[in-house]
Length: 202
Image (cartoon, rainbow, N blue to C red; front, side, top):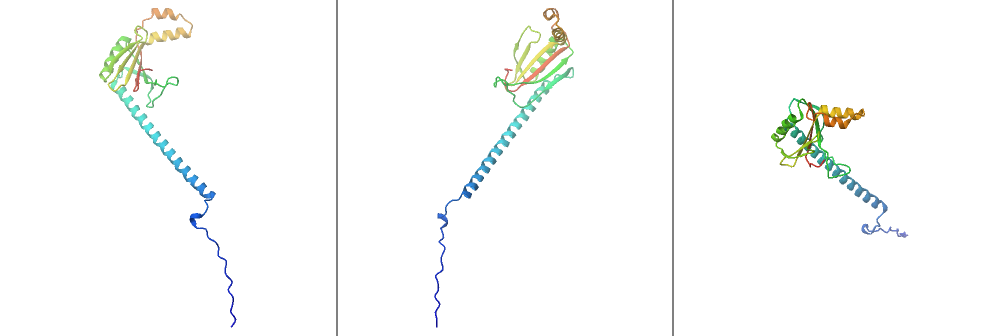
């Protein structure tokens, strides 16, 4: 009986898994996963920061409106303009100074009567008188502060006086003469009421 001779089959030499070289695909996938993780973290951080800032601005806006409501100027004060905002707005040139929210009114009374009326209302709202600046001028300012460090700034001036000076300036009139002859106490009165939650250095 003839015997068949088996030819040995060639065996592929397998490289153990641990010994396999790291390919470029592995690096690409690893870097991709890392970049996705970092991007996700940055996006989440930005969203969280935005939400915190939005919540703070909303809270500040509500507080500023609450202060104006507590002063309660009354129906005899006609609103001329209004700019109330909750975000903290710093001056471009001086970051330590911030803008105030402001409402301007027109009041059918003399300057002195208007100042007296608003002084009482601001104090009744929980603010203490701090100082008067520009005394003797046509538009002195009165500063008030709450126990929380919030500030109210009041400016009252005569509308007839302001209008006459503005008209004279536009028409090349004698501004100096008007300043010395016009009644700075004449009504109606222009009123500027500012609220600042941060400082009093505007």
